[in-house]
Image (cartoon, rainbow, N blue to C red; front, side, top):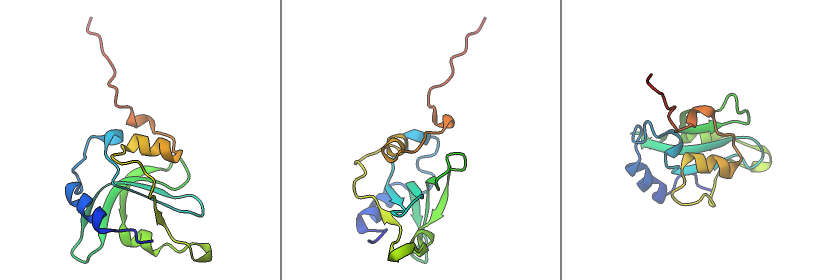
Length: 127
């Protein structure tokens, strides 16, 4: 399975790096990559095509441990280079709902939503 398609290339043009800053859980997920043999989920929200044809992408990277999962960068070439047993490779989720937010994609993927994604602001009372 190709991890990058013409359709995704067009989406990344609309969502370059930095385009969803500050949205956290309300960011739109452009693509979900996953390890079909075990842990490893990348919920990608932004990306730029580099001069060499590779993509630098940003999103929520979950490698099986909620305490170490983080928002960060991953290169398309890194995902493409991962070799799994029996000839498997990282795959693209074809069933992710359209216009899915990061929080919804996490719920859909069974990932614990980090507390810092809480978009509700604490209410303060002046006395």
